[in-house]
Length: 335
Image (cartoon, rainbow, N blue to C red):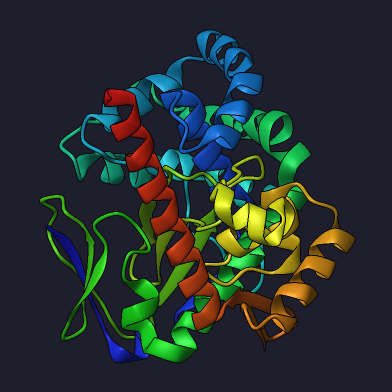
């Protein structure tokens, strides 16, 4: 398995970072693969993938490289670079880092998986920058205000988890196959990769993206190491259905909100995930909290809502009732 040895100083200095380029890279990967994690993501793919495939056919160099490296489950440095350590970089700044990548860096990256950079590859960084700019302008920028709010809400929720359970709890399950092994060892994935030691003044950056199937690592050794992971909330349009019995008890709108709050979320994130108006969400949250089904707490400037133990129990009971009802209907059908 691939794992990193993370020093205590590096872990203490770790931070969450918002990266427009990472969101664009995740979108590029989804457009190339054509796979969606949920209906909302499928709707976005259906709206943009045909145009992407036409662009990729006219500009095939980077898509072709991505298809080769995908066989090794490897994300080439040509489409992702570590974001700045302090503050949020603009997309233009991050894109400039791609366009200015030295070919020696690109060659060393591909050599990690046994690939050799071709002699005619002088324009690859520029072509990669052009492709990422097309994806950003056409498929990410129109949704960026919403996606950014979802990313902010995810960071707030994970910061809360960090304050309650430390880095082991915050990092476990962040990406498929990722978990804290103890003794400073962080399992990155289940792949057969050589371990890396992150120590000294190196910084570990955690970068959320809204695409549900995304996740990768990157580094600028020995200074920055990046873990990109999918947000827990995902894109608006992914509507988690509430059990009919719960909807009958609380009303459909409040039942959906209570169902969504298995993990902490902000009002803004609930608006994105449920499609309800901001005023309606606020009113439903107040009623559910007064009923003892929700709790709230503040993290920085964000207010997070999550189910109380009573709310968890109510949802659990209603799910069990739903399962029993479905089983009874099946038995009736057989007779």
